[in-house]
Length: 485
Image (cartoon, rainbow, N blue to C red):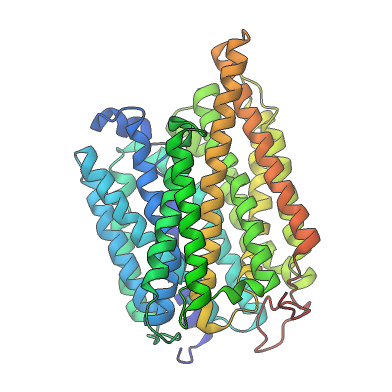
């Protein structure tokens, strides 16, 4: 990438963040609006899930391929293509007047979102090579990735109540146009770094495997976790994944060179990302369900309830996380952030039916907001540490896939546990609301267990250290031991 001034690099970062913010927002903004969408377009309770699932399927399935295409053909070119596709699909969602149109547009949104997410982090890593600047840039980017999910709940509630559900999609259009124009102006073109042909066999097998896995997971509650359909889909997914690994180990230009996982920091960070995302979904979705279904908040009230957490999330990510990483390295801030997230989930696991906002809800949201704002920067640094520029898109696609799959699996497990616990309490004589609240408590507890497991993996296995003082030209996040085991 051509030399750029410091000001130009930071302006380019803000463009990348704006583009990625659209993608992250769309993962959660739709959830608060689902009841209104169901009533307007006539969805059944079962078919309504496809408004979310259609996006998750293509988003999760095409992350790895999107990252590798960026390595081959240029990250800027793919970023533009993905943003354009996502913006056009948002227009399709916004004007949809039938179930089929909305679900079809959501499928295309997922494809565009996968491409943008897979290459945006790669572009950041090539823009910032000096240690201190990269840590600051990752703090900004980490805030967008993490805080954007909470902001999606906020904006979803406000837009749905103030206007209508169509605007949760239409708001992407001016943002997408601005991102495309600013990318053409501020981001210099770059050629692809990787060589070789596209690994179509690997792309087909891994994409099909991930899509089948996500399909099985998000429909597990309805079909039954031990049903022939669920187990069969997961079995086929496992076979395809095994076939993918065989293909990657035998061809000269694989989609995912397996050697990347010999980097201990990269492989361990992705495991931590899976566990962290599983716990995060307990906060994003189960807490919103608690506020609406138990406490009785409106869509806008749910969104506003997350506002203090969102502000703290952003402040800790932008102003605190990078300073902690530069002073203490990657592990201590990551453990501290995850610990605060676990505390927040445990606080939610004790919320009463008639929860008071200041006493019962706000403390948990603030703990999660502060913890996640601190934790996302170091985990992204670890996941990209020691990765060659030629494989930056691959590493970015892998860590995005880890977060998405962790979230999908975690949400499915948490929702299943909540439903099972609710049924058990209701059959034992508890009232409907009390039983529902008890089910959510079980989900929050399990979410805390996921995050505590991430802390254990970080403390026991992660060996990616930041230097206490960055040196010019020194790559951030390179493992201190430089080990590859």
